[in-house]
Length: 185
Length: 183
Image 1 (cartoon, rainbow over the protein chains, first blue to last red):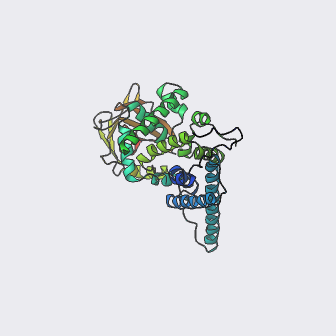
Image 2: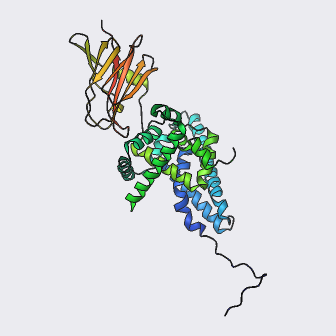
Image 3: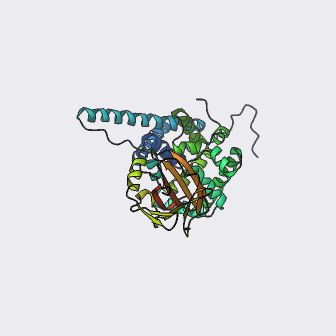
């Protein structure tokens, strides 16, 4: 029979969560969206996401990030810093091209980078799931995300309040997420 | 900017503003810092992004380009008080999804100018927009009907009829058509 530990006995240690194993599933999507918006280029966004994760893994292994609560902010700041470096480099390149008499490359566009974030086969699955929502929910999501209307305008068109429209939007998104998860199984 | 809460994100529809590019740089950065740490708000953004991307990128030619395309239109007067206009070469961006450009008919009624068209088999809604010659939007109607009546605009104007499915994807469109009063 094992004696009970005394009052001064050290608390049993709990192994730290495996922060490294969780990095890609947790942050890959976020990093791609974040970088796409800042850089307007889906391919470059992936490079930034990879570089960010590489630096975060290095920091974890060096013991620079031990508190799991601090990890999201650390990942965010690392990605932000890398994006800023890319923007500064692009600025220097544009100025160099201008000095050579060549125009700068066309401005990257967020909407195009956005469209590239979702693979073609996934888009088909999303459209299929959308078609399984009730028409009211389809119209609502179309209003928000295709027509890019604000809640007040949608509420006016539907004869209801902006608050009600927001609640319905969240319900529709939740239902859609459930349908997509069902399809993925 | 102070840390956002989920309630603030919801109340301000930050995910739809973010995807539409409507947020200020400060708002976008605060929202990004939030979704990096919040599973719930990240899932909402992820699903909203899927909805947006499912439709594909949306590209609209500048108004001036579309007006030049409309200048190629042939006008045929048919019967008493009816005008049938059909675009000769509708702009490519109005015809995603294939399908013929809808023929638009106009005639005067005591209530105003009536614009009518044949129903489309897969249409959920029709969107009719009327523009002034300098591109200002004078009228926009989203309707399940195939007729819209409105007060004829003063001066030169153009209309644009778009056939939409339930997901608001464009099935076909008339392109820009001049609004022409009877002589």
